[in-house]
Amino acid sequence: MDARQLWERYRKHLCVCESIGLRLDVSRMNFPDGFFESKASIMQRAFEAMTALEKGAIANPDEKRMVGHYWLRVPELAPDAAITKAVRDTLAGIHRFSDQVHGGAIKSQRGAKFQNVLVVGIGGSALGPQFVGEALGRSSDPMKLFFCDNTDPDGFDRTLQQIGDELGETLTIVISKSGGTKETRNGMLEVERAYTAAGLTFGRHAVAVTGAGSELDQYAQKGGWLERFPMWDWVGGRTSELSAVGLLPACLQGIDIDAMLAGARDTDVVTRSRDVARNPAALLALMWHHAGGGRGAKDMVVLPYKDRLLLLSKYLQQLVMESLGKEHDLDGKVVNQGIAVYGNKGSTDQHAYVQQLRDGVHNFFVTFIEVLRDRAGESMAVEPDVTSGDYLTGFFLGTRAALFEKGRESITVTVPDVSPRTVGVLIALYERAVGFYGSLTNINAYHQPGVEAGKKAAGRVLDVQGKLLASLRGSKGTARTADEWASAIGAADEVETVFKVLEHMAANPDHGVSRKPGATVFDARYEALRN
Image (cartoon, rainbow, N blue to C red; front, top):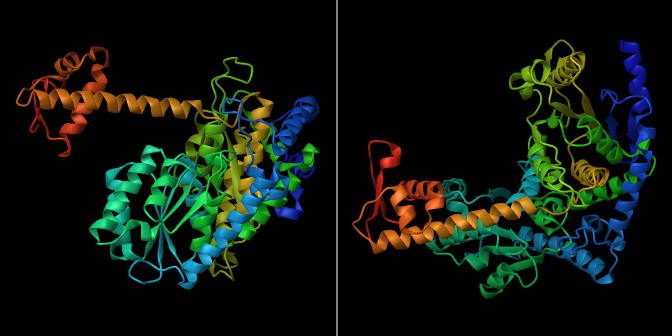
């Protein structure tokens, strides 16, 4: 295809959405003539499923739940007046609470204004707020944002060290729908201990975002926490950024959350169109379907040419992979669906993995995110009539061309800037694209059985650890190999788990387990140092 033909293809297939400031270019995806006509019927079924979802259909049959993240920006769409009121009241409450914190009406225990926000959560309770905070944060923000988003002890220490002496002026938000998520529970306990060690009462610095009546909700009530905001069972974690999960940290940080909601709301209007050529979410879903042969055979590489959007790929990893990575379709057939997502940022990617993208294994398609505005105000010339932003555009267009020369497909999403409205647009665009793709492949995009399986497996490991410690302490002074301890607790078929748990316990002082080296790593012997 020569340059003129490519230009004509670009003009033909460019989706321009003026109302939301977005353009979607799919011209460098090698779909054949007649592709959209061939998918018209299945796409119409996807539109019908989306309409039913927005009206309150049970879209998550496993849990008998509605899926209503679209109601977060247009509460009037909710099928129940109580839901409409709850969404509106929560948004008003977020604004009111944030204003009181910023104005000093709500102060820290020592009477100082809060300067920092520490978010304790994991998965959707952290990835969305992290993405938004990184994308929209400014040095002039009224509060700085920090995260504990794992159950890594060193990670807790690092974050608390970064906060340092400002812990007393730090507001902690604990986010967990059920209140039983162990990573979040652990983070909360670690952070609470830090406040106590500093002579502070945790509850006077704490806010909960959780389900009504959950373990966390009860804990917060008992501890006299400053405030509690709701999480609803009809909002999944990966689509919760525009609920209190994401809006509360963003509002406290000083971000215009109403502009985010407006961007998402206007994108919902655009992406309800049944004219596929003018619906960017439908186009994205169809391009994903085309690229992976309808079964996710190729990875999605996300390359935003903007530092502020670095975390977009991590955010999309969860949204896309947790939604679409499914073993069974809705009919119970084994399909092993999914799209792997990874990414970096331009032009850093030029110096990282573009070499492989151009010349290596062809198992991917690229999504470029182009941001038109370089910065607020003018840029200096680094060469005559050339700015650093001109170079960024040059590298983007050069990489796009270099990949196309080798038959590597790409999509380009163009936005005017990185503003609250634009971030809302991107969130809503990808939320709906994921929903459409789920319909195209006949899978349930709104449950996550694999995640639950992992949690159950982790629970079994801790059961083994408990039995091991009981046996070790009951035989204090007796040193045995992993094989011997596995037999002693009746877990001979789980000896690898026993070995890994013993190695971890011996490497840390917490449980009083000692390791004596042997001829090989598997001959090491372990014993309890205390009862």
